[in-house]
Length: 209
Image (cartoon, rainbow, N blue to C red; front, side, top):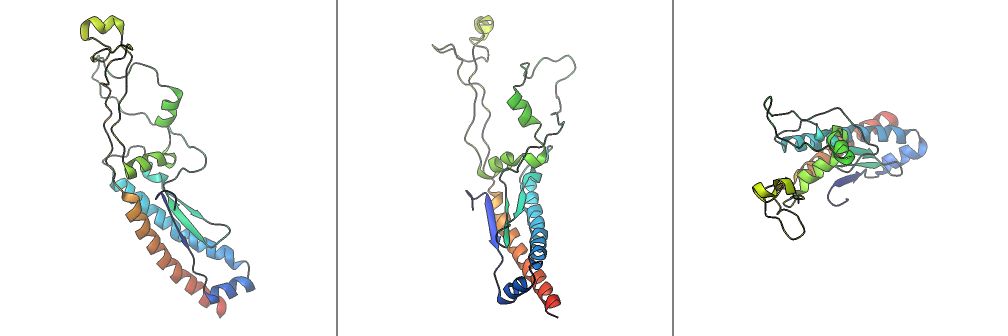
């Protein structure tokens, strides 16, 4: 397990299965196919738990839950770790300003901010990790604007310190830990293991006939 963000499971090597794999190497691919099937179901359960933990998820971050089938051993995992590669979409947050109303951030977004905004749901695992573990209080320090200092003592209305910075008026709040992953992943993997046992038993019976 990696920092409680990934949970794995190994197929118990029973004598019948070992004998079957030794006599028919192609069966390993079939077993891996069964593992992939039950892990997809487990991934969907973890994703649903993440979705239920959010009031709103317009960018579908719940899709970032992932599953993996191991190649060297019979087993696999579900996690909220980053997937390989990054997918982007054209999502733009809705504007709430009235016609003619001034407000909002009139500075251009940095490339990094623009990338984060347009990560597709499958690439937003970082959101799930924030949601799972929570965050401390966050804030931003702003440089003062001398043209506005006479009016409000700083570009954001705070006192200007000796470094020409206003006091931290850019509070972004904090995220309360939901801890959804531990419970949902363990439950999902238990179900997956039970279903996999049934599927493997059925496969063994068919092959042994």
